Image (cartoon, rainbow, N blue to C red; front, side):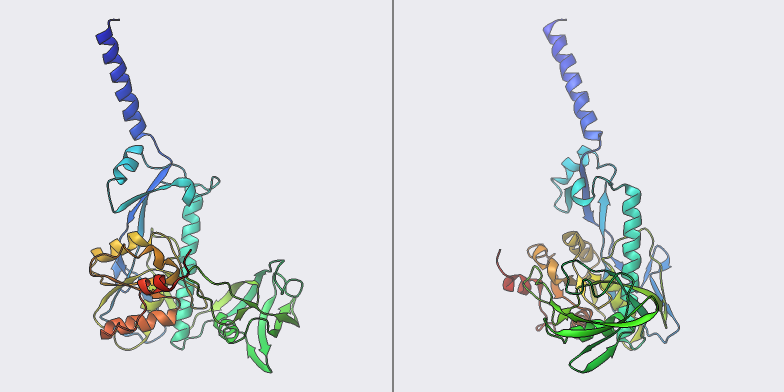
Length: 367
């Protein structure tokens, strides 16, 4: 073979291998802004949130949940060409597959987990919003586990049903998760409390010394103390029926916006006036707003819907500074109550007293 022909064959082989490399699955998933959806409106022809069994009110406030679109799966990353293209697209991000999913997870596993997380977020949102509007959701609080390092170890065990908590001569019956959380929020760490519980159908009590909450990434510590046990809720009794029309969207990050939409439905007037407000965050049954992933993409999705106000979990604030779309204010929230006050202030045009994410970052401990 003459040298010229050899070079042509070699070049052609290299080009073929390069093309094959670009179309072969990589070890990366590419994330970008997903749709922002008005939780009080319709999505793909279905009403996202509908209530029955209580009086509801119309509202002019737009409350958008935000999402992240992900390309690639736990089984296969995107083609290398898509990873290469993401390097030049400011609104796209390539993330290693193993940074998102473990080696043992399949796409089916991830879908099931995300669906379960979405269901949990919807349940928590309903419990919190209904409770704040006087529609108490009764339940049984069951011990799901006790860490060996906990002061409750050996006193409470998996399956125990909590019924009461007493401190300083004051007894609180536990009928909801909020009953327990609100009482503990007023009890200093290191306090001995008497916990009433049912085990195998028998009523018992145990004295437990409460523990302090750990400070979060911003340096903030939850007020009060904790029992040091894992809890699950069972036998929930909803006085108002809440239906969700969400399909093909998973994960827990819509909890905050669902809870605000339900609260707005059940209270007169428009919670945030005629403003367009977007946000994200998990919602615990006790009303705490937790951190989520992909917030920079969610800011973009919210901006595309015209939102100038965004509610972010305090623990995500560091990821938002410098990434706020033009004209958008990002406000920090830690609880459902803070979120309600923020939406009301935005609606009234009185936001000067609200804490922005930039405020939180400026006050956070330096690493």
